[in-house]
Length: 182
Image (cartoon, rainbow, N blue to C red):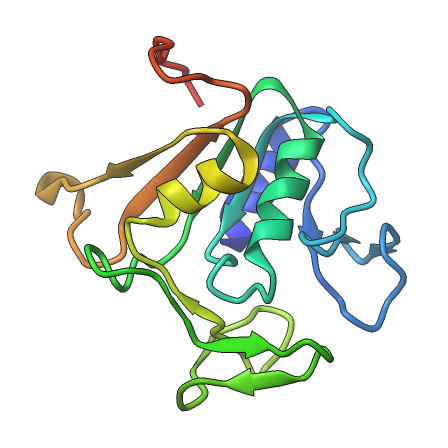
């Protein structure tokens, strides 16, 4: 969401807004954005208290690498706040494409694209996630994830894909969660 990114850029010291430009040098600034591939970031270890991603994890070819990279760049007790369409809800997450041993991509289903602010052709959907995303992240990083569903008719929050997920680095089962003003 461009308006949120601009608000964070204005109000949060240390904020770094990123986009991924596949044919540009990683880590370089392109306009207002730093070019970063979530699967192979150029940021230092333990660089951030908070990482926010918005509707990108359904477009990533190797989501395990992206979640591991976010884990690497978060400080201890740092949080990753993100949205992703949980299309499959209670059904298992479904990869829409896969790479073979030689790196060739095989499409399992008809191609599906979502809007993309930097590419008028859109972004290819690579995964239909379900609630098992929580177990996927914990298996790949060791970090727990909680799903928050916002539903408030008075504020007009009502619809299908309104879940917000929060992963906390190094939080262990049984640890208490603290409320944070974000």
